Image (cartoon, rainbow, N blue to C red; front, top):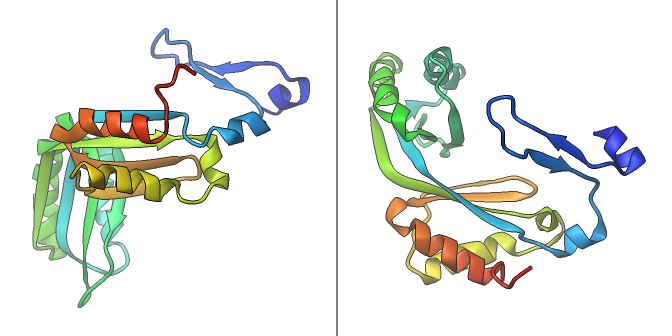
Length: 191
């Protein structure tokens, strides 16, 4: 990547698993910063798993996620609630095809660690906005949340990074969410 910056040469990172064009790696410039949000993505092949009333003590998260990683199950978003009375809820997403297997695995683990139960919701989708300009502009998350709320779309989970904000919503609202976010961030104006 440093060579791409030094010599101003386009660099593509390609997958060895398909023939897609890959990802262009370039240096950031001021024009990229001006475009706060450059895209909206969604994934309807997600399921939300919640382990309810997990004892809040060292090693419990590892006990929950180790059997999943040993079986090659990819965990995406992870959120742990604030501990109340020594217990917390741990929620994460997996690919929908893995949801039942995850629930079966974790039902036994939940009993072993003293958690209350495992819930699974396969009717969710992850919707994300992406843009390099987000890291230098305040209020982008607020705009996203307000746009979804304006359409009556409840946010079930939120995850952020420097250039991406992802929300878990009910899958039935996916297309509406994509449209409203495109409108909110003016992405359909023939750029």
